[in-house]
Image (spheres, helix red, strand yellow):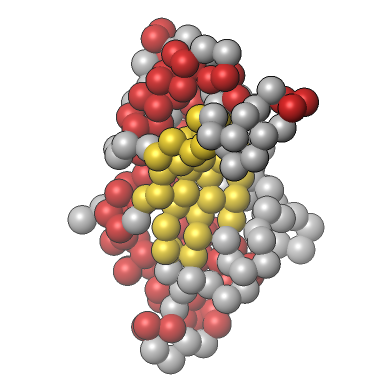
Length: 184
């Protein structure tokens, strides 16, 4: 079983039940999925950018990414409807917890000049999104083989009803948020 899933069952559930007064274990918020997406606009000029990004994302996530195509044409960006311009992966279950474990404990601390993630990036429904500027922070990526730096967006989707519940849950998982004046 994934280490973070064990932490959820042993520590996070108890902490959330104590803080928010849940009577039933099934009412406690949990992680639903993790969505990783990459915009690969450079693929319009050269297909090798898309292939390289696809390979990196599959190594990072452990599963094959879905290629996203442009829905409409935008002449200013030289994008035509149907062009392949992005990649995304949705992780659930054991793969999600393993990815979150690597993200929290290995990848995020490797970001240069890291001072914590913004605690304000919640969407109002308990989901947290943030961006990473380069894929080389993940230990699976061979830095010597990287041809170009590619950023990605990561969205952590939870069943929490409010942002505060989700923030508390992610803190109990060990997510390194910036400290604000009102933190305890």
